[in-house]
Length: 335
Image (cartoon, rainbow, N blue to C red; front, side, top):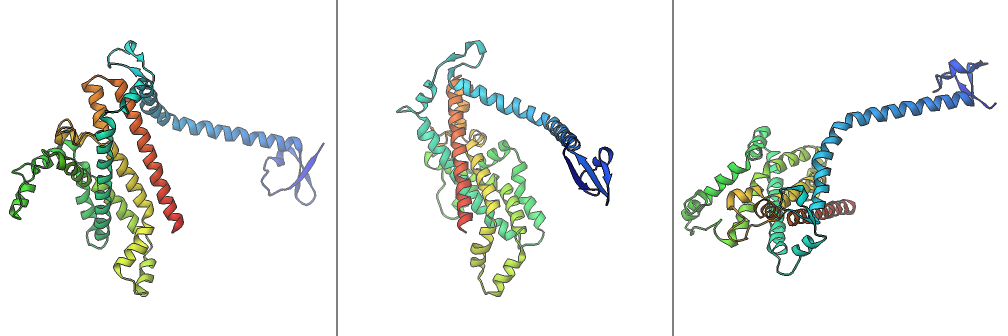
């Protein structure tokens, strides 16, 4: 029978009970001993795996019930016709719902998806630009915790409150037009004019999401080693050069997170639009994909078309997110 000789202070503690002591403090272990040790290790590894899955079971069950099952049901409804009452009334429709969304003359591509992309893009540009500037200023001020809390307050405020306050501020006799009149400018029908309704809501959405972006970016700025700034100061670099060549490149991970999350929030947003404009008015100037899905399902009872629109929006969000990740990684590699 094959045997192996291991040191007595090696990894095989089991050898002392099953092998024989040889000269010089060595343990002679047979192939059977090694097989038994390997079996014990595999059994221990399987036990750890089972325990790990038991701890994960509540989270997995939660995602299965509230994410996986609704997703599968949405896929089923997108290929069916259903009024939303009795499950027995579900009728197969194939790809008719998707064909109707992209048919000529359909309002889903224009203006719904167009408004959605403009809304998300405008929110990201305004929120990201403002958050970078404000976070950079906060890091150079005293009482940084106070300023971060002040900018974070809109996040903990309900969408209904934020929307109604800004809605009254946009009124012809509201605060915004009062400031414009004081500057000698005419009043603007912000939410009543189709040309200004969507940009007006975009400004509110960007303002409301500014706090979380500032919180993340200030943490990213604090993580940048101060030695880089000291070296740049010794080299005589200006503030703009330091910001463009040191701060922004090293802030890329935080910028990526903020950009992706803000874009997803913008593409999914519709509660603020309902509060400020009602049904996406005036006309369809502020009608976005999430609002269109809500109206098709709960207002018109067309759950099949609403589910098809939801899947299209899901694919759009996935593609845009992957493109953002690829662009940031490519820029990081180039840098």
